Image 1 (cartoon, rainbow, N blue to C red):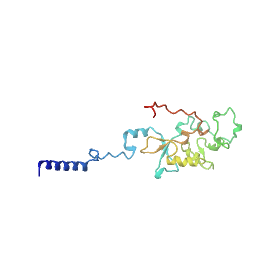
Image 2 (tube, one colour):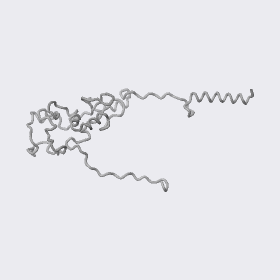
Image 3 (cartoon, rainbow, N blue to C red):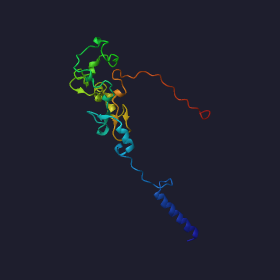
Image 4 (cartoon, one colour):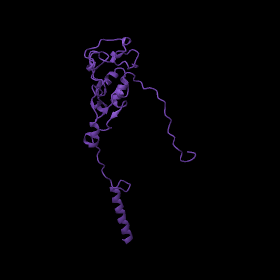
Length: 208
């Protein structure tokens, strides 16, 4: 065998071995590090979760039957707990009889024509809400279940992750905002806003 043929055969064998161990782009295959299975083992993002105050969602599971969590609401209500002022149950009062001497008269109820304050608020236990049947008190932290009595499609989408806002990243514990974090419960419809014009991008060449 000539020296030229021997050299050619050696190059073929060398390139063949390189092709077996490469990814086709001339780089050695390397096993990518596995992402953390949960934020609980990621110190940086674990600290982000520690800053959130949340409770387990009651009476529902998320996609795949996984439990998830909702940001606490009661720690954001300035005059909570209500019994600090309302020491005794309140008698049902028509809205037309509400006096300017009452508290909370700055609240304008624009939710539904048939709703009054006592539609949602539990006058027997002012620190809680109530269901439409009035049988069980409901914590402000779980007001999504009260909203879902009428807005059941939105509640379904909220449970599944298509409606609402998730907090703390997309890995690890799923923590979501409550309905009242985005919607004013007394006037839940978003107000109209003037649309902002699209950005003006200078053209890089004529005719394009």
